[in-house]
Image (cartoon, rainbow, N blue to C red; front, side):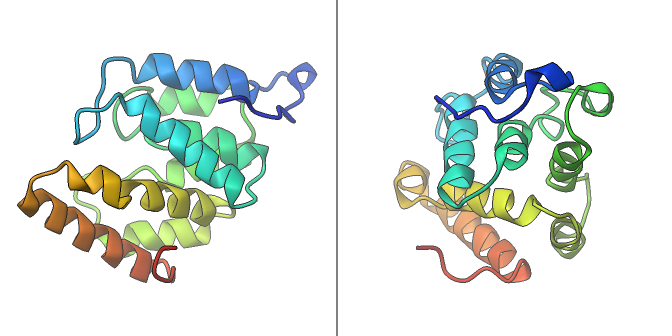
Length: 160
């Protein structure tokens, strides 16, 4: 993804391009439910954030949104990474915790500035009919219902 990198590397923060490279490496070898390289999902979410008017911190968070949850990067790494507090907060808000009720997860997203837009882009890609079409019917049905419920909990309308 070629990004307009508005992160100021002189500030000591990782740039969007550096985070993209890091996220791709961290998720190397991982695949989504359809068997596609996981980095394709990260790129689609980052592009979805950009298309929805997200800022550089949200785009960086999009690249990292599943990194802690999927054990690609540790929470300690995230805490110590040269990233903005807002970016870290968004990533942590989007990190599902074991046994966490969907209502609590949605509440944390809604309470974290900037997180809803990233989650909206994530849900849009996850629920893409072309992605779901390659899954078996029970999985497709389960995921479609799961994503619709999360959209409802977040106050998001029906996807475009």
